[in-house]
Image (cartoon, rainbow, N blue to C red):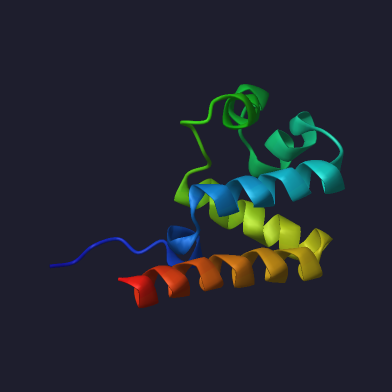
Length: 94
């Protein structure tokens, strides 16, 4: 069976994606700039911020990771390591 694999972004939780978004908002100063860099609407970014049931797709998460890596490599590493520790704990507790 062949399935699509979206890479690293597929393994980042909603919480992790929202952390990335929060840091991007700090780095880029506003939701409109984040939307512009992701080539999406501002409404999509505002939706992620306001609606707890919405979050960036794998594709948008991947682009956010790329942008944040260029803007603040240290922060992206911290977020990814936190995500790894959460996943590791869940596996060991299972």
